[in-house]
Image 1 (cartoon, rainbow, N blue to C red):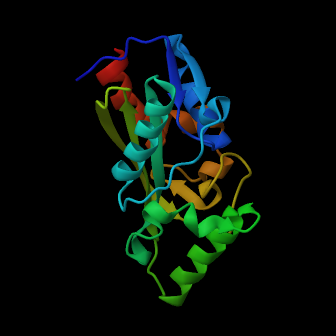
Image 2: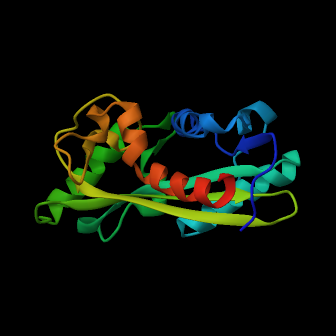
Length: 202
C-alpha cells in the first residue's frame, strides 16, 4: 500500500458538508487541504453504478487536473425495504432545478417504504468509499459502513443529507441529533477514514 508523503491534498468535492467532515478528520496530520472549489474544478460526471467507481472518477479527475494527490468520497444510504435504494443515487434523489433538496428525498424514501408496507425496523446503512489517487494514476481504496435504521419523522438539524432520518445501531438518536464530533467517531466516513489513516498516513 502506498503511503501519503505529500504536504498538500485535494479533497475532490464541492459538498461543503463532506468537506467540513474531512477537514475535521484529517486535521491531526498537518496536511494543507484544498477543495475542487479552490482549484476551479468542475464536477465530473459520475457514470458508474458503484460507490468505488464514482469515487475513482472524482479522485482521478482532481489528481490529473491539479498534479496533486486527491481524496474523493462517494457515499449514500442503502435502505433494505427499497432493495438497497437510493444507494449510489442518493444525491440524485435530492436533485431539483434549484439544487439539492434532501428533505424532499427523505420524504420520497419514507413514502416508498410506506407504499410497500416495509416491515420494522426499517434497516439501512450508510456506505462510504474513499479513494486516494495520485497524479501517476495509482490509487488506494477504503470502504466504510454504518448500519442502522431509517425512522420518521425527521429529527435534528445537525449533519447533512439523510442524517435526520438515520438512527445508527446502538443509539436512540439520529445522526441529525448527534454532535458532529460524536458522529465523526462512528460514521461510515469515520470507518473508511480509519482504514485510510492506517493504510496511508500511519
